[in-house]
Structures are given as C-alpha cells and as structure tokens.
Image 1 (cartoon, rainbow, N blue to C red):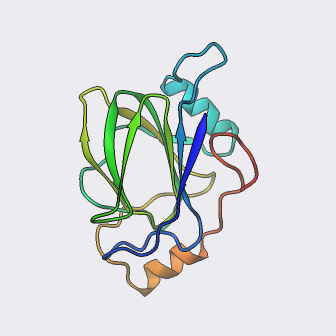
Image 2 (cartoon, rainbow, N blue to C red):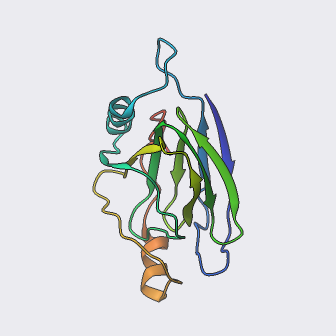
Length: 159
C-alpha cells in the first residue's frame, strides 16, 4: 500500500479542511493478495472506529460534508474524482484504493465505469450532511469544531 497526501486550501466556494490532508491509499490488498471486496472494506473501517454507512457511487456534483470526515473504499471498477472544488485535483481511483476526505473537503465524480462502487464510512458518532453551496458562518464553525478522527480508517494508527 502507498499513501498520497493532498493539502488543500479554500477553493472557489468550497472550504476544504484547514489542516487535515486528504489521503489517497493505493493498492490495498488482502493477506492473499486480492483486492478487498465491499465486506472486507466494511470490516476494516469498522475495526478502526469508522462504521460503514452505505455502498454505491459518488455524486457527480461538487459537494462536501460539514459534520463528518468520510472514507471511501473502492471495491470494484474505476473512476476519476475531482477533489477540492471546481478546478481542484483530479484523482483516479480503482478497485483496491481508498480515499479519506476530511470534513469540508469538496469532491465529485467526473466519470466512472459502470462497475465503479465504493463503501462509505464515517467516524463513530459522526452523521454526515450534504453541502452544495458556500458555507455560512455556522457551517464554517461546524467544520472547524470537528476534531480529527481518533484513528486512521485504513491502518488504525492514531490520527
């Protein structure tokens, strides 16, 4: 596994996170060398305090969450996501990759093959919201008040 870090500042109307980097985990494999399936991602995330919440794709419009950090585990297919808002970083993901999006981080799916599916999870006790507009003062306050997750969703290390 290889981990990439993207530090993003505010971009256009998207706040992004002021201090926590986006993490892109490349090439996750099980002990026998296979790409994790949906259940394997769910078990991994849950074992590190990130209970899985849903399975599916990624919205194709720019959005962010102001009440939760998010991790996506790609269990099949591939896609290109734009991270950080309009004109942001383009990240190509494929089965066996995961993506940690700190609270406030903009993201959208640019394109994906028909097989693309992810598991979405959030730290224990955090409920996600959906923001598609510039943050007001209350939204910014929620983003800044949310602490870093206690543990990394993939390797379980303290954040």
